[in-house]
Length: 499
Image (cartoon, rainbow, N blue to C red; front, side, top):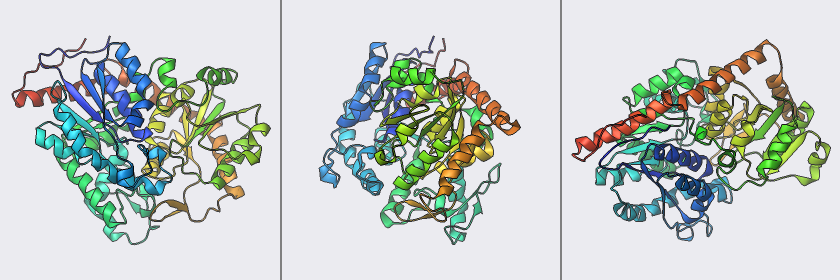
């Protein structure tokens, strides 16, 4: 039985995710978790994006949850974007991403106007960190704004310590390694792997990052898609850095309990879920490697070929989700007896939760990491950008639940990360993939220890979301904080009651 909130004044949370799959999906899951506590939830989005999760929202409403959509027009053409482009996934190339972020500021006026018409009066805003202007609206309306980053406590603490210490000012070269200050573990990085929010290289980006940091200083708190048992001391230290206003409420993907919910998260899948399950059912437990590089796959054609050849050389059964395909390689025909290639969106949670999956070759996006951990599946880390190189450090060095492949030697350019010493398309990359897959699937002492750890984290993840678990309790604490805020403002409300 889900917990509920008894109150006179109905709580109303407004959630505003960045229009990109990796940001929208966890926010939709979070909306369902709040709604299960008898809270009214309004999700703010644009027309094209609303279609991506309409089925999930409709099923939630049919089950009795109060989830609404506030749809704002997105003037793509007026902001220099291609007509109809409302999502980062739909951009012609990664170079358009910052222009898209700047374009989202055009939503501020319509959001504020629509916000004033919402009933009941919203109790708080939970908005993506990429929308610093929502802090102005929250301040004007005297309601708390909670920030959502979509990353780990580990990365957020690394980011906080790097900025606070000003260590980048004394680090001259892109390739000079430095140790992130003030961490429990010795985490060595370079400027080259830092996300642009930590190391902006243009005046426009510097200004945008300054806006984000100013908004974070006034944020009521931070909500994180993670769980305390996974990050332990990093969660504790990040709590201290944020004065105790951090709520780990994940893994939020675990709210998807039914096969249909798991299959229909995000975009429409290319493959029928029953066809996918039938293929997986035919494989031995723990024998299959699932490979996926997220909705914004940054692999070049050469890297795609090397990845394909590495999977083939490993001799392991595999499922590979690709955004586009290299037909001339005849890869599918050669591997039709042991490989399933999914071209387009894949039902990732459904696949990872299947007993046949033994390893997950991932770009180390945080949603993917969490979904792999939930399923108790070992990870092969191949980061490609953003904070993913930090996630690799967490997976391999800190938690010991995976191995890494490639992407070690890099330089940064203004628009992308490029390999420095690895020759793209060379046999070494193919060998790196083959070696990593075989290492992950090995039965030796190290392999067994990694498997033990990730299975243990998988069990802890599920317990965290159950009634009385750490994330379940943190969700209660967050709700109680908002109720207390309302009480302090003289608004009628009652304390949380747990079933």
